[in-house]
Length: 320
Image (cartoon, rainbow, N blue to C red):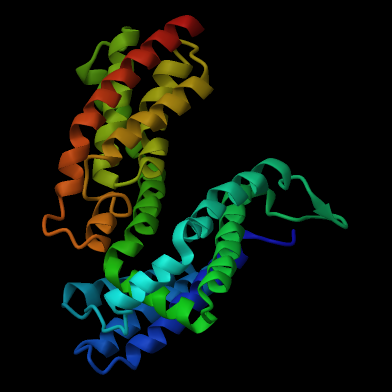
């Protein structure tokens, strides 16, 4: 293949490592050395994650956790544009400001739809196992080039702004990767089997309705704990959906997986553990109440969860 997921991680790693160098040099940050070390190690895991042995990657993660736990991570200082400069740029660019943001989903869909089977010579253009992520990475890179052309800035300015955004997010930037890893560990450790046994002792396993309720609510609750529906999905599906819905009742696995993930997303709306959806926006918008986003989303999440339960029950009845 010509473009792999490794290339995307290497690009991200280069940006993060370069940003960490600015953090080391930020004399107005009283924790510049520990903060810079945190982001430097994060960049190293992105750059060399595929070749560093898992034990040493774990050691790097523990060092990063220690930095955060001892208060060594602080927000740096930045030479941001004044409100007047921002107004002038906004007036000059007007609605063209949205072009880079719109390019990302459009180019991602094009890559996933039309470029996934394209070959150059005997090799695929995109990594067949990670077409979506590679397409997203390439779309983001193209959007970056378009942004630089529109705003007449340099790659260094792009790296400096990336550093500002990453430091605004802080330690929460690592949470999605760590929670996804935790989901894999839970599944390997047999948590799915324990969940299956627990559900069998609580609800009548001959009742399709109660199994559907247990699976959908379980997906939402476990996602609230894990912070990521992708982390909850293997555990809850291995524990409830496969043995009870698919094997026992013969329900279509595609329907179960789709509605199960939707139920998990309901949990995403209601938890601070889903940092990239709830905590990061609150940090970027400088909200005083960091849980305000979650409180606003709770009613919608509960309504959607009830709808998913009803939809899955109706769909599974149609499959029987």
